[in-house]
Length: 290
Image 1: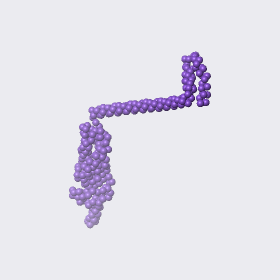
Image 2: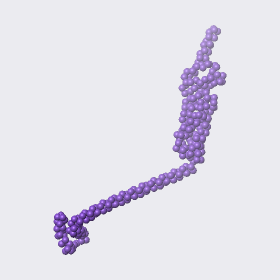
Image 3: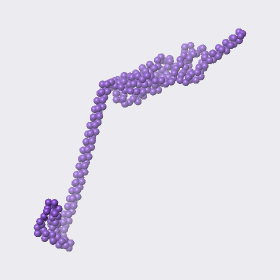
Image 4: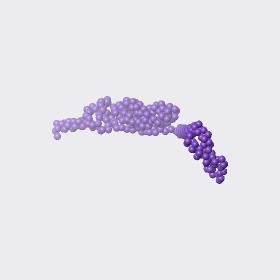
């Protein structure tokens, strides 16, 4: 091979190598940070990219897939001075690769430290009962505050979770006593309310019975008054005959009552009463004629 052919061949090979080194294929889950003489130039996104060979180089390959911090237990003193341990989980992803490599050296440690500070600050503003019952609120507060703090590092906080709330044994025993006392109080209130309703129903029943009895007495009194008025009118119209009729009627009613008695084996009726029974029909005739 002549010298000219060798030079041409070498030039072709060099050109191919340079062309190949200028082509960068970035995977979907990554971004490449490019530097020129040690200074940041650009960030290559997923797909086919072209860079200036020799002058530029890929300094960092950054994974942009979502990742999770190892769950950590954080000690928190609540507003009412109860010590609790919150177990939290944080999910995040890198949205600015340049900031993630030039602003912070250990992303996971930085996020973990920030989470601890925010959780303690949020829990310290709440009472123990709120910490237990408002986990969703705590999650929102942690995510909002953590997102603001991590934005400078090119990190997006996608989700935060409070996995568990743990208290020490003495606090748990005190909580159990309080719960038992609350149950007893509710049971006492329920019993008292039941007794009150029972007494109210009994009083209503007695009032209803008294009203009905009073109504019955009123009707009976009206009936007796009506009968008395009727007898009085009859006496005014018929005189002595009506009086004798009323007396005889009462005597007959009394004899009928005596006859109903189970202890009565023999009834002796005076002669004047038996005579009077015979005159009842005569009296009725007289009343009709009047």
